Amino acid sequence: MGTEAVGTLAYDAPAAKVDRRRLIEQLGDAVRGLVAATCAAEAPPEELERAIAGTRQLAEGLRGFARPLGTASSSEDPLLPHLYPAGHGAGNPVAPPVHVEATEEGVRSRITLGRQYEGPRGRTHGGISALLLDEVLAYASTSAGRGGFTAYLNTSYHQAVPIQVPLEIRARIDAEDGRKTTVKGFIALESDPEVPLVSATALFVIPRADYEGNQK
Ligand SMILES: CCCCCCCCCCCC(=O)SCCNC(=O)CCNC(=O)[C@H](O)C(C)(C)COP(=O)(O)OP(=O)(O)OC[C@H]1O[C@@H](n2cnc3c(N)ncnc32)[C@H](O)[C@@H]1OP(=O)(O)O
Image 1 (spheres, rainbow, N blue to C red):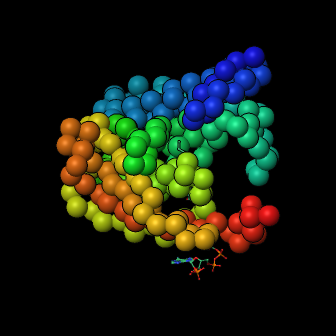
Image 2: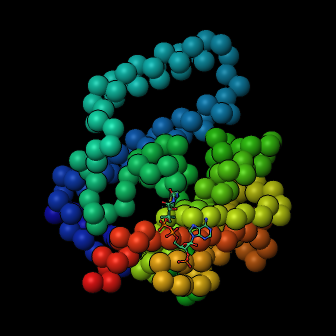
Image 3: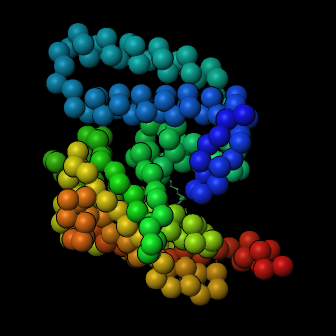
């Protein structure tokens, strides 16, 4: 049996599943690195052609093992983090590598964004900032035992969020009202964590059926 940390819970997942999840995370990380290198590469034509052929061959190899759309991966486990969500899945090379930890007032995530998240030169794309805030604010709601889907995410962009610079994202519950949870948070430089670069307020709503089911 392998032990994988889930919040404060140590869960003995079957070793084969843990090993497989590690490989999936490593593949996600490797392809994420390839995506970042692709966005930065000033390579000569022959190197680009080599990269195109090699990448197409790798993709073709993996496509043969694709699971049907809408089905869960055999590596998913209800007690372990999902591997493929676009916002944080460690196995999803498109997802920024978001890790969240609990703090006294809520949650915090430290992250450095690669070149693939660039919008205007040197700055993070605003949609990526919104994605990060949605993710970390949702995590604050979930880890407080609330959860819910994002009903709105209001973002204010105060200053540029730099690429390849350590960032800190913090979030805390602002209000709870039945099925509704309002969460506030912001992205800052890790070196200047009190100055918001992008701030957000989000409303998370638990669907009525889920909420009423939990009240029984
Ligand atoms: C390591 C990292 C881990 C990370 C851990 C997890 C990270 C995952 C993060 C992903 C988060 C997402 O992106 S979620 C995906 C994006 N969001 C969605 O797909 C949601 C789509 N929308 C919906 O499914 C629905 O609209 C819901 C569930 C949000 C609400 O539906 P409903 O339950 O039928 O809503 P309804 O009865 O009308 O409203 C309930 C109450 O909410 C209020 N309300 C509803 N919508 C709004 C709104 N836009 N603005 C204001 N208020 C609203 C209503 O006024 C009402 O208040 P009152 O009258 O009761 O006072």
